[in-house]
Structures are given as structure tokens and as C-alpha cells.
Image (cartoon, rainbow, N blue to C red; front, side, top):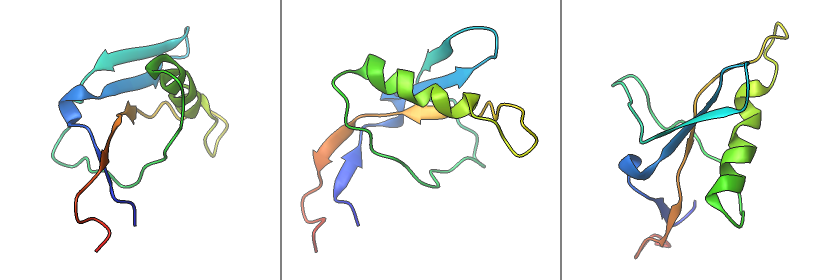
Length: 87
């Protein structure tokens, strides 16, 4: 179990790929009630720009029928360790 918290959702960047050019980045999530954080990946990078570059590769990846998945990727920073998380 990881003891680090993510920054608030309002500070997130949403990365998508439209298939016409580079990644499309918008500020903050516009989530629906049905959307939940089902998992996450930590990427140790030097800048937010590099994290967005890596995140843009995920929606461009081919799905089961060979078409790009075009799913939305939320990029958020870590806040740091949460007190008492190692209990």
C-alpha cells in the first residue's frame, strides 16, 4: 500500500489524443458520478510536460480491434507522504 496522496482533482490535467495531431490537454477533471479512480501508475519525471507526453501515448495505443483506445488520462502530482499511512 502506498502512503502518498494525490493532489486535488481540480489541479489535474486531462490528456486525450484526437488522432489528428498531438495530445489535447485540458485543466481539471470534469468527472461524472460513474467515474472512479480504478488504479494509477507513478511516473517519475522532471517536468509536467514530460508526464503529459508519456500520458498521451496511452490513448494512442491500439485496442482489441486495432483502433486507438482514445481513453482519457488524468495527470496529477503527488502531494507526498500521508501522516500515519504506514500503519
